[in-house]
Length: 276
Image 1: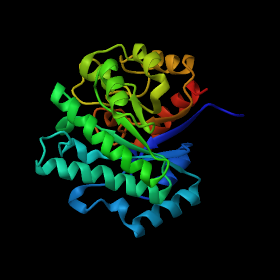
Image 2: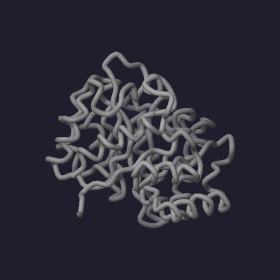
Image 3: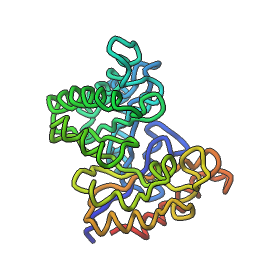
Image 4: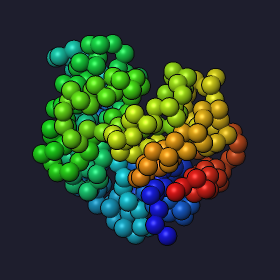
């Protein structure tokens, strides 16, 4: 049976990270894993050939596709700091390292997230982000058909402005079913239609209005409007990956069971039930 969506999970949502995570993901039923390039402190492990080979061997063994590689260190190092600011250089190196790893491992998307240290909160932040994204998307085009997926909390208008002003065809939106609700209480489903031509992949997670941190509930059990968002993605013709970014080995979700694999299996079953 042909389907428009495939189901995956972020590596950092699994109870065991590393190549063995492929087995756990495959045991549950997932077909893909979203990786992270690793930290600047450890010199970006997934840029090392021995590490890449271990991941590729495990993916081949368990039938897993790597859907995306992210840049979680951008939460620590500010990619939109003023020119000459040391953290900005580290952030830029984080993104280009992820692009290098994506090219070496045949991963189609590099996610550039802008939260915490790299949050886009002012007009100046947005202008600097346009410059950074233009540079890294140029680099990604030089490396092959690699998409830059933007995940942030910009309004729809500002997100479309960023994409338009960067002007590269490989700049897309990495959409998330909870982030906007968590931080701005937005109607997430209402954002789908204007963004759908640009969405390259989707994180799924859920939670509650009172949450401070993301991933406060299993899928469909929070109040973020998860099912409404999924229905709108389907109505608007989204095709691609749905990637679980719920966190099964830490609170508050982990309080539901001491078995993280059982929790992620429950979310997988929810994802399977809404797949189209």
